[in-house]
Every structure is written in structure tokens, then in C-alpha cells.
Length: 156
Image (cartoon, rainbow, N blue to C red):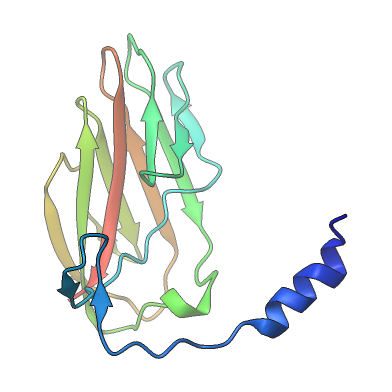
């Protein structure tokens, strides 16, 4: 049987760092991974500001999705930052926020005094990370059979 405390401790103690000279994809092709990773997660408890349909989080695609909607739904997430140390942004460095939406949905990112405004799919804006800040992610559904919203925040 599975003994969570004992077994997870044994697994953790058996792990070691991997040193990799080259990366190979599923087809056997070598590649260099992109070191500029997205530091924004769409996971969280979003508050429904208006509308009737609340989004759900799709873990695989890392986006918020809505089913059929007859009116726009607006949701907001207030993010306490930094939650995790590996993705901690550096004040004064430049970052780019990009919306990734489908079905008429829109995405907004706010940090400190920077506010992207509602953006549609593919729209990007650059900003300097502030010294002190709070963060807000706001999403708006499309109207129709289904829509989705996510965004990326990547250091330049």
C-alpha cells in the first residue's frame, strides 16, 4: 500500500539534479529550450464581476474557458506576489504581456501603475516592472458557443 509520508520522502531523497548537454524532442531532433518562460499562471479563484457564466481553468492549455454565453462575463483575480521564488520578477526590468484569447474573449493585466487595458488575441504591451506592486488579471468572455482567455508575462 501507499504510505504518503514515508513513500514521498523516499522519492524526494532519491531525486538528483540532471545535467543535460543537449535536449532532444519526441522526434529525435536536438533543440535549445526557450529560457524566457511565462511567469503568469491563469490558475486561481476568479471573482465574477458581471455576467452569468463563470470560467473554468483548463490545466492542460493553461487558460480560462467559458461554455455557451449569451452575455459577456467579466471576472477578476487579485494576485498576491511573489507567491513562488523561481518566477519572481525583477523591479526595473522590462517585461511583455501578451493576450491569448479565442471566441471574442479579452484579457487585461495590471501591475503597479501599468494597465494593459482589455486586449484581444495576439496583442502585446511592454512595461517596466515596478518596485512595489499589486497585480490584477481581468478576463472577459466572448458571446456565443464558447471562448477562452489567457496571457503571458515574459521578461525581455
